Image 1 (cartoon, rainbow, N blue to C red):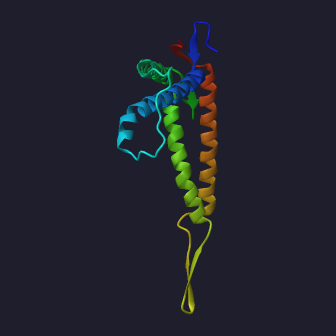
Image 2: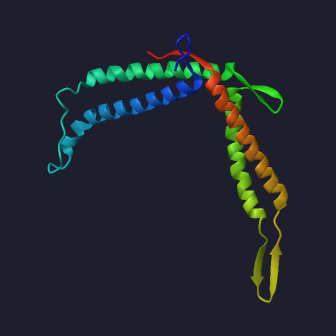
Image 3: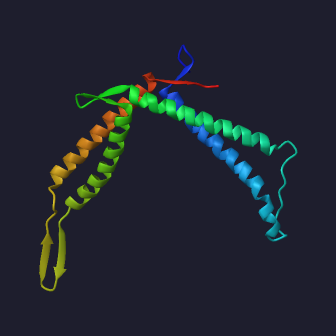
Length: 177
């Protein structure tokens, strides 16, 4: 639901961009299917043949596709401007939504790496060789690595919550036509 001036909130703009992406993908597929019909001449004659329906107008769809792509670019630019304009509090300092999204991405990568380290630090490796056992202790303390993992999980939850809240309050300078 747009604000009083007709502009979208950021969460609405994200959904609209997703809608544009799905629509663009469909139109490109329709146009591509029609353009590939000449390639079917060289295929096996026993295959099913398809022809455009009587109300299928490729030129109209191409124009609609161009307009939709332009609208998507404009929407994306407006969203990027909003991402730099609005700020959240993160660890005692103000950061833009764009920075928060980058932090979220990095935290997700860190969590993936740390989860592997947690798994590796949970068990000793014991190699049975001849009449003796060789014990390899984990490189990292399980407790420390696991605490680090849980700390990053809390950080990611906090920043994602803040991003969602600001998305509900931030306005994108874009009016849906």
